[in-house]
Image 1 (cartoon, rainbow, N blue to C red):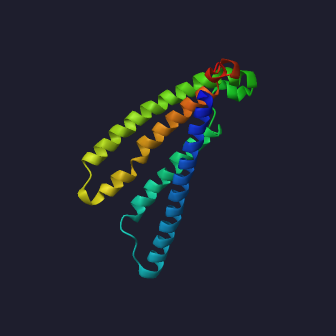
Image 2: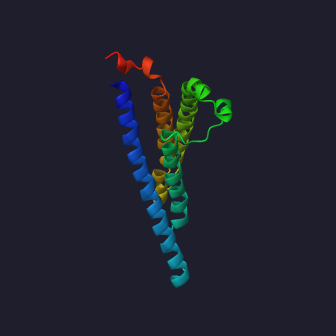
Image 3: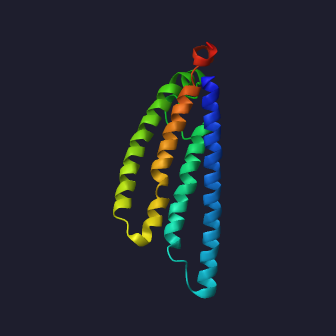
Length: 165
């Protein structure tokens, strides 16, 4: 039951993350096209358009990173994966996922502190930029959650808590 709930949570998160990444990508395309048309036809650009595009890159890339973790297609740097021995990968999956989750928790805390500073010192006209940069702590938190879910879902079936139920 517990593993089923973890799988359901991960699937729900991936749907939301995919939707956010797709919306951000569509907004990037629309904003880029409007900027190109504006520059070429009207010799003007959208005010703040460049800043929004920079933030939208994060809105595409960071949910994409979470999707890669959920699909177990993220970058593997551990020696067990380099050796490509399935038995080693089974042994190292839980500790490496927990280690990655711990690092992501630290990054979430740092990103939250950064966002709070940015919010505190943001001018009234650029508050929207601070809201867009909220993706940093949210995405690192989601990455931590995905790595935790990956660690739980890596538990061998014989040791799974829902087998006792």
